[in-house]
Amino acid sequence: MSSLIEEKDVTAVNLAVELERAVIEHVLSEDHSIYVNEDGWFPYWVRILQGAGFISFKTHTNFKKASSQLQKLELCNELNSQNFLITAYVDDDRLIIDHVLNFRGGLLRENFVRSCRQFSSNIQRGLNKIDANNEFILPPGKTESEDESSH
Image 1 (spheres, helix red, strand yellow):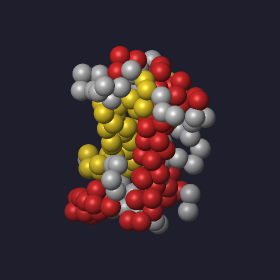
Image 2 (spheres, rainbow, N blue to C red):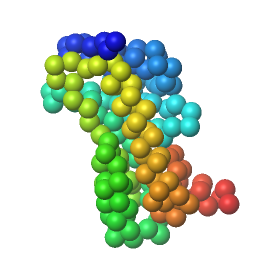
Image 3 (cartoon, rainbow, N blue to C red):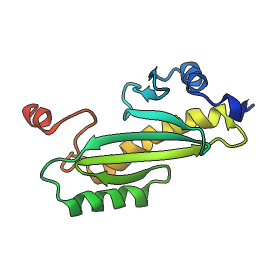
């Protein structure tokens, strides 16, 4: 049976409680964002956009320096065309990936937890399809010098 979080109760603290219940590793920050860092997942931030009535899922990683602007845009286009829950775009040397979940009228707990799982898995699946060998994109948290020194 589904349970509803009333719209007025969609807060960072309550969403963090739902992640606790689902045993998903995360950190609730003072700025009311939630950093989801579950082992084996592509890490991301969850923020509540109260005025808009959305929960924002957002992450980024770096492109390799050798990636041209055209390669970056083509890669984002490929990610966008093959995935339903994510939007990818270029911001200088970063690949930004996001998704929003509407909570107007309330939020089903199960829908939030499922969205958390699917956001990360869609990113990983998409990147594995289009850049499995990290030719254009660095793994999360890596810089080019760290990546090159590990070879």
